[in-house]
Amino acid sequence: MSTQRLHVGIIGAGRIGKVHAESLAFRVPESRIVAIADVNREAAQAVAARCGIATVAESSEEILANPGIEAVLICSSTNTHADLIVQAAQAGKHIFCEKPIAHNLGQIDRALAAVEAAGVKLQIGFNRRFDANFARVRQAVVSGEIGSPRMLHIISRDPGPPPLAYIRVSGGMFMDMTIHDFDMARFLIGDEVEEIYTAGGVMVDPEIGLAGDLDTALIVLRFRNGVIGTIDNSRQAAYGYDQRVEILGSEGKIATENCYPNEAVISTGKMVRKDLPLNFFMDRYTESFASELRSFVAAVREDQPTAVTGIDGRIPVVMGLAARKSYDEQRPVRLEEVNG
Ligand SMILES: NC(=O)c1ccc[n+]([C@@H]2O[C@H](COP(=O)([O-])OP(=O)(O)OC[C@H]3O[C@@H](n4cnc5c(N)ncnc54)[C@H](O)[C@@H]3O)[C@@H](O)[C@H]2O)c1
Image (cartoon, helix red, strand yellow):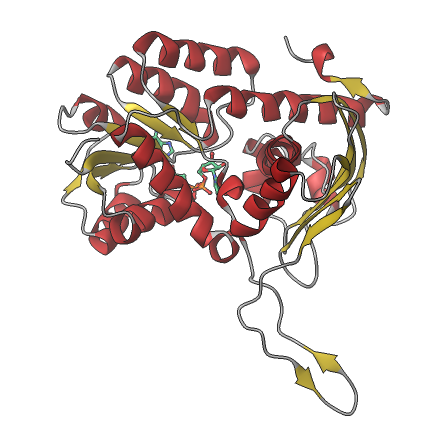
């Protein structure tokens, strides 16, 4: 194992770039952020000042050309990921890239081929695998604690929809939001989905429908090993971020609850109540964001495989394409139909 700290460059200083910079700077002492770049220089400067990053680079090219940088975090908008992966791989940098790699399988395959050719490491930002609740569910499946899994339920509802400008470029709900749940489904069951059926609608905001997307969906998954599952998505839950999972197995079930900022219960003559769950991903998944980066840094320093590979990044995109086709054509869609 290397005794040196891993020297990292960050590309993209928006919402998630800031979260990752803070995790590395304050919670992953085995790493050092050498430089950060964003086409919005002010955003990069603000994160650099907050996290003590010495260099604000002019561009992603400057980061990739820096021989002192061993690994990059690609935290820029999704439409930049595939090209940046190719460029980073060709520059010999190890890569952590946010989800999704791209919306298009051709671009994903080009990026994964470049990674393979360069022999660098790639980890995709499916942080929920590192969440303590979901990791415990996976452990129960692996250990056989609940017998063989039969049914999986994932509830994944956002507190409110993102701005329409974001929805128009995000690739839609399946690529942007459900993509995490597709990854969770594969990860928790430890098997691949063969067929998807989507019942969905526009119930939160008609403008989302006019932008070509949907905001509410129930997705039925059929796994190769016979397990059946559902993903329950909404862009809006009035009571906040709702992130739960349940698996029914032959010997019992395992279920997780939402996470709360405190455990206090207020009881009055009228009602027993508590505060709302942690509001959104930045609060709910803080620990998992730090853990996934610890895992990436360790994989590079110890020359081990990464925990979430390029193929793990590709398959949820195939699932997203199948979910959309099913919604459009109102029929079950086998993944092989869209896995071009
Ligand atoms: N894992 C998660 O839970 C999670 C959460 C949020 C976002 N994301 C993903 O992270 C990515 C960024 O999302 P966000 O919410 O931070 O968006 P954002 O719009 O807040 O930030 C993106 C930043 O990238 C910058 N940028 C765009 N092109 C660039 C380029 N070529 N070089 C350098 N900087 C560039 C933009 O100026 C912006 O500051 C998306 O792919 C999104 O899907 C993942």
